[in-house]
Length: 188
Image (cartoon, rainbow, N blue to C red; front, side, top):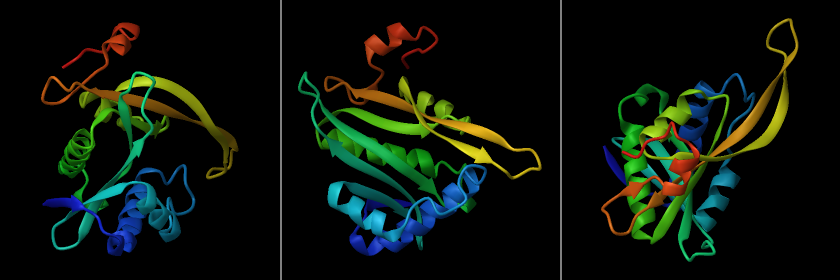
């Protein structure tokens, strides 16, 4: 599987893979497409999509440079990690994450930030295994749930995760101050 920097001509394929992946994973939460062509085209103006392809586009991840921190470290935002449902659990998501992290490091980022929703219980574990640690929670919205005869609400929060790139090493590591605040986390 080849991972490369996407070109604007890939926008429709990116929309298709994101919507297919999120439709499968978040159908209980979203009752519409996750993203549209206009949004993807706008993201090309601010950041970079990396895409995985074999014979066709089958995965993507978005990275965007962000303003530096007060201590001078540059940040990147990572999001929209999506893998064609037929290829999920094949290691392609990890391959895309490796490429995204390398892309951010090469661009001089000291930190990578990402946001996930709290109702996707498998996501914190996936990212924590990669060295990301919880930074904070933010309320996103409360959605009335009507898929059963009983009405109830899903409280959705974003969980912000962070990973620090240590320029003296060859990879990313967990920020030490975050490790101290969460004793159950361990640097690997």
